[in-house]
Amino acid sequence: MRSLWAGFVLCAAFAGSAHALDVHQRPDWVLGIGMGYGRGAFERPSGVRDSYRNGAAPAIHFARLFGQHVAVGLTYEGWMLEFGSAVTDTVAVKVRRNLQTFGAAVTVYPGSPTNATNGIFLRATAGWGWAGTAGLLVESGEPQHNAPRIDEWGLGTSASAGYEFWIARNFTAGLGVGFNYLDLGGQLVDRGAFAAMLLNVNLYF
Image (cartoon, rainbow, N blue to C red; front, side, top):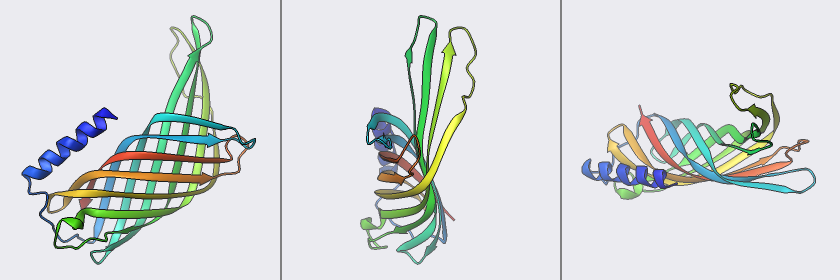
């Protein structure tokens, strides 16, 4: 999390030197990439919740703008973590789990195109969600390999908000927060949710 804040401070510093409070008209298309950290939980069909923190949270967004206040497109958001415990001095079990969503997204820019509120964005996404679970037996001195993974699919939704600084006429960077909820009804994961803070960069073209 410290590295994420450091990246945001660095981004803000560059934004300041590049007249970040200047605003520009958004072109018709945007491609955004985000990376951060989050925490979340997997709920089993029995109602037991497995909670974790500090998993990596990637995001990709692609959209078409309609005017200066609304964009419609597709968004992917994920949260992935890996943990394990020793069984003996030479053998350990490594578990990899993830929650991911992909769907149609509507982004609203509620601020004025002529002042600093131009950088505020709100986004809602609805589509597919899935949870992945894999377990791997790791032996000392042996190469690791990808373990068979069980994926369970269902409904995925998300809501996010943030602010983007104009670094150049076609490029922004900023910080965002998001919450994802998944309703899967699976045998391993009934429901899941995660929240994340991300550093985002966006290319407008």
